[in-house]
Image (cartoon, rainbow, N blue to C red; front, side, top):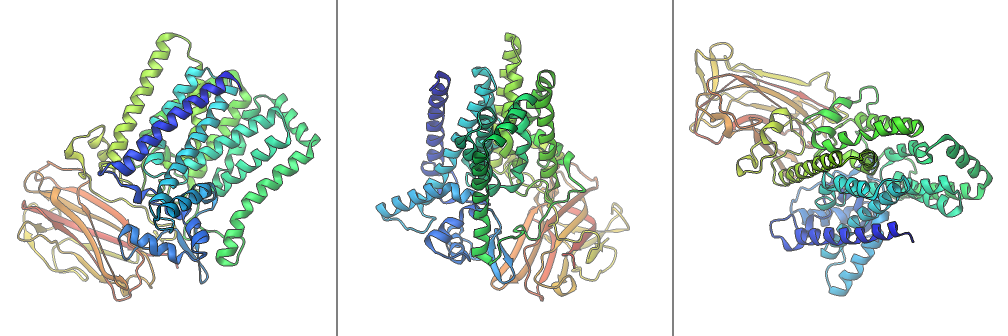
Length: 614
């Protein structure tokens, strides 16, 4: 074993001890944390659910899993988003790779639960604990592969260490490793780095061991997140030059046994998903993301990279700096440069083509976390090219700034300062680097994208109210005649005595056939008679009996940020999806509610409602 390899392992062991201590303190010993009951959470529930469903319940319909999750979240109407339908069969839309990786840790949780007498149900203390520790194990393994890659790329140890430190503490990889470890990103980070490492070994020496491990890691990469197949574009980068690439191709032809084993292991791993689908539905091929898809003709590349909602370079500027490594590649190695550029283009294009380009609730553009090992390579190459002490000090200072910035933003996200899906420029600037109590829960507005299957061209209903006369489907509440109305001579009036605005009240029968989800877009003009009057106003949407035994109520602050303007009209907008509505007689209500005492005027309230494509 080389001295460098020993140092790498020592550092990773120390790093792992630190992360485990931090994780255990946060999840077990800190009363203010989410606690161990939410280690398996969010999309992670879907990736993980295969293990208790198949190994404990022997129930591919996930009914018992849903019962346990319902008790865990404490919400009787809980309906997991990862379960979809194929005919009359229910199945899990997420792929099985993560569950396969967590299997040893799940079995360990089973053993500990049996020894200590806690429930053997897949969700009690030891199961959740070992799921989180399993994610940390794969995080460290991913960094081990990354360290070996950097070593074989002749990166100086100091530059390699700085790049790895920055890529963890200076990006949202830190958040997803600690707060949402069972999301797929930490696992994909490990698998991609492992695949690149074993391909690099295979390029240099094509033999049975390297071929089998490369096939295993590629198969697991696809089994966890299929779009990550794009990493095969980096094979020329790993070869380094055309001579080595041609040598690799000739070696693969001369040793067909190794190539055959690569293919068999790869196909064997990928076929696990087909077996899973067959067990659940009786079909071996499915499009599991029903009602979702790609929009390859209209990718949101600019938004994905630069948007204040989730833009990669806005929330993770370290990644933008890492692209400086392309300059080093362009000067030193054209093959590696073009291979990396092709990979980056395809990765961005695929991510930006997904119907929900910001990937729902989350901290930053999480879809890129899988590739952070590759960005770390670029960052290390950039650092490796710096020789003078002033340049190195400047680089270290810049990395430190990004680390501090990411730590503050992580705190903001975990303390409900940064919104999970509705940020914009105004909000970003208002809370930028702030940690005072005034910014906690201070942001309002709701700007949700319509689901993939919503017809946004033809609204099923457009409801407008200028408050000049009674309108169909609008309740008749307080209005006043005023010379400062935004249009006409009357406006809606809100204060402590009249807290509710004239609002929409419309039957589901007038909107869409059930079951259906609706997409609601709204805008309203607002005027504060006194400073901050509208800061206590909420937009409210509700429906009784959305489905049997479940009512729906959702409210959010009308203003994007706290306002101080007085006697000046401004437009407030919002958009969101309703839950699945099964009751044809349900009444959808939309109105503005003030919880404050200061008077507020509203005018030209407009709502557009859309339903699924027919």
